Image 1 (cartoon, rainbow, N blue to C red):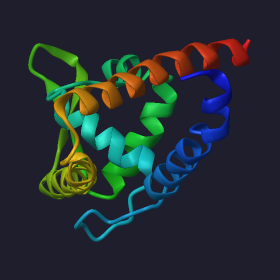
Image 2 (cartoon, helix red, strand yellow):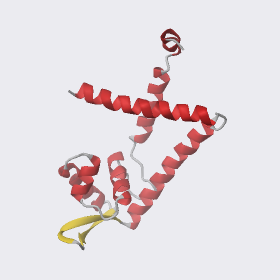
Image 3 (tube, rainbow, N blue to C red):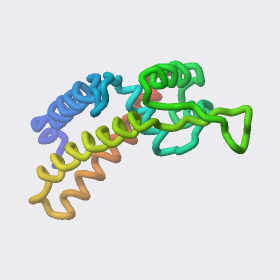
Length: 157
């Protein structure tokens, strides 16, 4: 397909609308089956704590590529909401590790269900496509993600 045909199809416009719609859905506060509203940064912190059992603030900051201060602020909010608890690290008594409470586990599992619904929706859309078409679509998304990361670095300079 030549560039003129691609320009006429304007693939980037529906793609941007999809991205904005995902962002609109993702940035809302939700309870995730708990009695407290959770901001996106809070539920993502809960996910990282669950996926990295026994992690500490510095470890979270490194994984998320943010400051320890930013992690500490969210941790304090999650602790006040009863979603996480701090415990002494058995291997290093001067360090605290983070663990989910039962309420934090509920939020984590309901957030996973939320993402599963999106996965089911996408699978439903591509169910009649051939394996090659689905692979092509996935490859396009992966390549686009890589190029957007490079573009992001370029525009941030």
